[in-house]
Amino acid sequence: MLARCLSASLQGLDARPVTVEVDMAPGLPGIQLVGLPDKAIQESRERVRSALRNSGFRGPLVRVVINLAPADLRKEGPAFDLPIALALLAASGQLDQPRLRNIWCAGELGLDGSLRPCRGVIALAELASDQGARALIVPPANAEEAALIPELTVLSAPDLRQVVEQLQQRGPLLRTMPRSTAFEAPEPEPPAQPGVEQSLAARALALAAAGGHHLLLVGPPGCGKTHLAHQLPRLLPPLSRSEALTITRIQSVAGLLRNPGTLPRTRPFRAPHHSCTAAALLGGGISPQPGELSLAHGGVLFLDEVSDSSFYLPHPLL
Image (cartoon, rainbow, N blue to C red; front, side, top):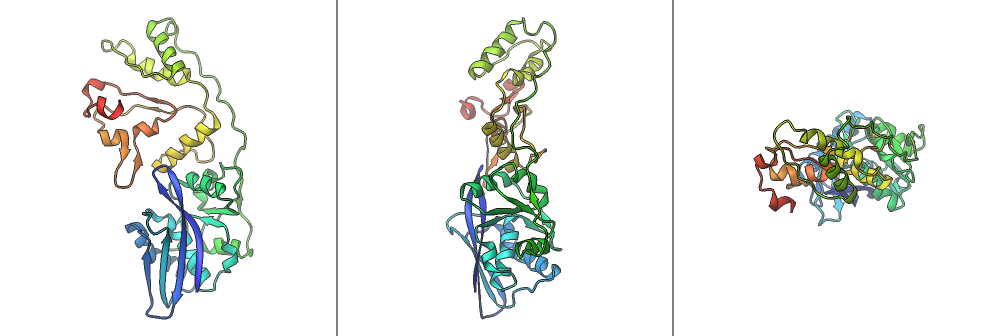
C-alpha cells in the first residue's frame, strides 16, 4: 500500500517542498530510505520504529521503501521523523490516508513518541501557506513561530499519539493562534548622551544610516568609536513586517530564535570578535548556515579592531 505526506527541506534560508512516499510490500521486514537522505534522516528509521511502538501503534512487519521526493534534492535534519511516521501509519491502515491530504508537517520524534523542535519552521510555514496547505503540524515548541504566518492553520501536539488522534478527529484540535496579527512599529529609543549628536562622527553616522552607506570609524583608543557604533541601529528606519519576517527566518535557520511568538521590533546588531574567520563571517559549509553577515541582515555589522582581523577583509566583503 502506498501513502504520502507533505513536508519540506531547508536549502539555505529557503524551504523546498518534499513529498514523503511510503510503500509497503510483502517481503523480509526492513525499511529502506531513498531520496538523498543525510545521516540524521537515515537514523530516523530507528527513532520512528521506537516512537511507533511506544505510542501504541504497530510497527511495520513487511518490506518498506521510503522515498523523499524529489530524489535529486539533498535532505538534511531530523524534521522528517514526523512525516515518515504519519506516512507509515497511513500505509499500514492505522491512519486514514485522506486525513493527510494537503496537510504539511515537520518535527523530530523522541523514542517515547514525543515531538521535539526543529529549525527553520517559519520558512516551512511560508512555503506551506504559498502552496495552499490545509494545515501545518509542528511540535509545540515551534507552534508560535509557525503561527507568525496568519494565513496558515497551525496545529500542534506534544506526542505522536495525540497528532494521530487530532487527524482522526478523536481529540481536541489544538490550533495555535499568533499572539498578534498586527505588526507594531517599535517604540522610540531613548536619546543618546548629551553632546553625541553635535559631534562630527555622529553626523557621519546619521548620513550613513540615511543612505545605507558603509562607515569606517578611525581614532585613538578610548575616543568613543564603539559607543558611537552601538548607537547606529536607532538611527535606522523602523522595521517593516517583511523585514521582520526575513530576520526571523534567518535566526530560525541558524537556531538563534529567542522569542518565537513575536516578530523582532529592533534591527539586529552583530559585533563578531576580530578573530572571527571568513567562514564564520560569510556562512556556508557543507550544510549551509548563516554567517555573521546574514545574521546582520537589515541591521548593523560592526567589525571592531578590523585591522587585527584574521581574514582578508577586501575579498569577502567588497
